[in-house]
Image (tube, rainbow, N blue to C red; front, side, top):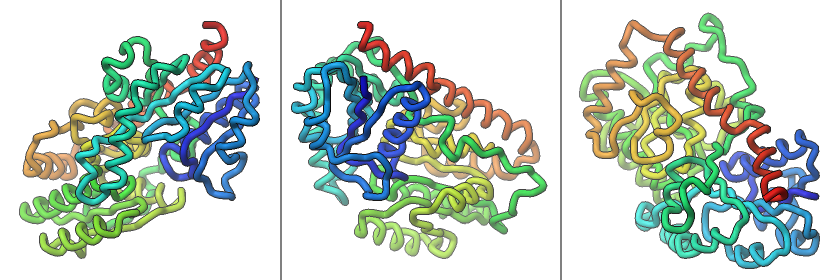
Length: 354
């Protein structure tokens, strides 16, 4: 039996691609043969084959695992294969959050939502969060959808030790806030910039670091102009894509992570920041709130002035670091345990045993 993991795209550094590559590592540790397939992938990404070759290679005793997050033109062909099939569902972004700057992506998300009833044809459906599982209401019973976080303890961010307090670089002369993820409209980077301006109004000097690819030039230009209008452009640093070492330095030297997205199927950066012992400030109403302490979550409608007050209170508190840091690390490790190899072993074996 071979586990055949497929997705429209598998790129290292992308959340879906990282998860597919992580599944392959799990399968190998469990002693399973595994192959990866995608339509889009880097030639340098090891062991990823063109998706079309899957249809020529699959055998009846194989398991095909589809990673699904957006419209997949090959979905019906995959469902027609005469083997066991698992769908790992990352969730689909609300098209309305994308229409202004990314109309094509919004259209693909609309097509994906229309495709969701087909997911009932899989032998098993696994979701990345309870929020994502509930989005399948009416298509699958909630208790029939397994929930396993899209992370693995062997990911670089979770393998490293937290830096010693006396050896960490000061990094920023002022308190620094960090946003990590693709610079796309539903992430609401503009709200992070607005929050920075609210802090400035309170005479709380801070900087904002934004890490992630910016595939949409119009949105990036809007953000730069937005920061300029608010008078905080010089306090905002767009880092773009970073390698692991530079990303980890951002986590180590920041004061806190902001997660203001209006849609998250999970939000790996929240977990990475907590694992680094850093406070997180998370917008509620998405799956990101499932993985952090309740007092880190702000309701979806909470005014940014309330966020600013909480940031000032947290970052000027004298009751900081070791205890608080350890609590965030423990929370992150508990989430990682929910995606252990033993849990995946049970999921891979279950389709074979019914």
